[in-house]
Length: 111
Image 1: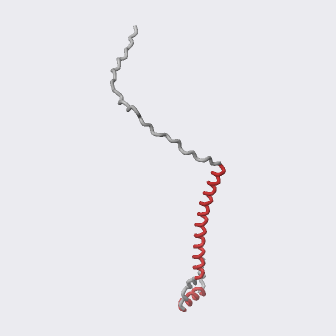
Image 2: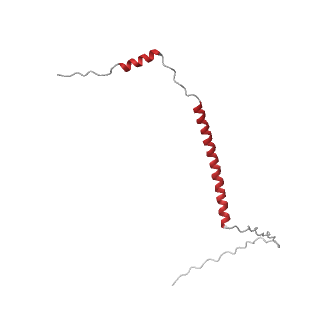
Image 3: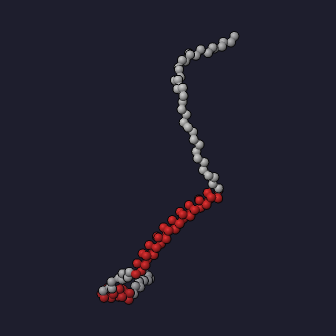
């Protein structure tokens, strides 16, 4: 004997859907304006032109920077280099005396 389970009858759901209005105005669907077909070469030319514009801008910035650096260099060359103050005669004599003094070490021999 096989016992089969019977599925319980589902309760009848009596939910009413809201009644749709008699006339529903649908939004007017307009087809988007089609663009004129553009060839691949024209697109490539446009991209290349944009890249050239970017590179030209970078070149101009670098040129301006180089010009300012050159101006700074010219200004530094034109300005006289600060010369060290001449040393006093006593200091000169002391340095020449140190140079004239021999710095040889004496070695002691063990017997």
